[in-house]
Image 1: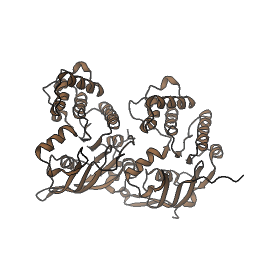
Image 2: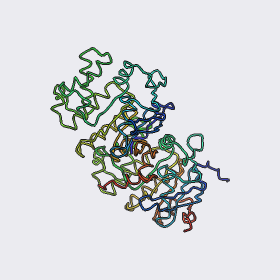
Image 3: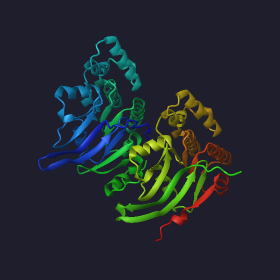
Image 4: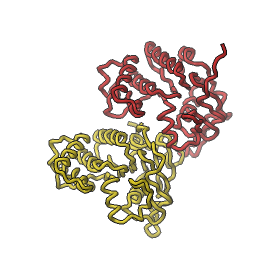
Length: 265
Length: 237
């Protein structure tokens, strides 16, 4: 029951057009096209090996496509082909307008520096240089993701899995990105910790009007967070639609199998 | 006195629904065909028919929760009639935000969110201030006999009947021009059933168009302006 306050703007934020990735004869992703609007949460679901993580990497330009393209509406309102961006422009986008939440927080955090520095670093990367303001903003963000501010000078190495994941989210959101990619954000967490994290993410997404592309194999995560779902199988999108439509009335054989495979709680 | 003709809010023409069960060897289960009726502003149409006749399926097609396999389901969305059967997901979300509400008997509770926020959320999402939304949510909860000491707790800890009443409050709070009611009074006690009937009356006076499923004959008599017999849309085997 994701908040329906999505997509009030009429111009897409990100557009994938015939996107594909092949490794020699092996096809990881094929012919993927969709448009994502501001404030919209899209879940990409499918089992391991369906190509959903590859797709996320293609969309976030961490992997070069072998077919098609991804375009993104920059802050100046111009839709640009991401492959035409220079390395510096691409990195700037990643530091400011985009976030990427990894399944393993160790990949998205610097484990040996303090939590405060983990959050502050992104601000410094966009030109903040007033220590007091950086510290103050970092503190506010730790509170927002429900981390005890008394732990601000501790390194995330000393944090629990759930705290690490919440810190990673704070680090990503501090620059007020418009688009956040999430790769199995609740993957390695206990069920009770998952619920808390999902609830937190859900609140932040609607409060900040974020667009999110979340890859998950967990349909409950998709149900709770997303407005729209794409079901992937063998590198292709086989079904797409409104989240409750796909989950309550799945049309394709594989989607029906996925939905019927959920164990009732 | 000539009655004024209220505008048509929902117009369903030849809608149909068939489920194809791929995991059961591709069995096709036709549910309804040729569904056609209109609902005007301020009118409550009750769907009747035995369990399995397709009443809920029709409601879910109007909400865009089930896909419609044929026909037209037009709802008045702002100044236009939008065909939900062919609408894009974004359009359906927009319809749910500002036009069509759905009240089921089951609350899909989000862990940890307090009851008062669960109820106030639809108002806050459409721009009402937090304080005002909480005030209205409180009034509605009081009306539905949910004691104030429970408002700060998440409804997941409540009894089934209490959860249902929280869900009713959440469903009735936004001022949407169309409401779909899927057995809103099932398993409520007499006092709370009466409250729901009053809420429905209030919505009618406000010009809300409603489609309802109710099994209780007494409630049906109280709320129905018209009854549509769903068995007439049954698919001949």
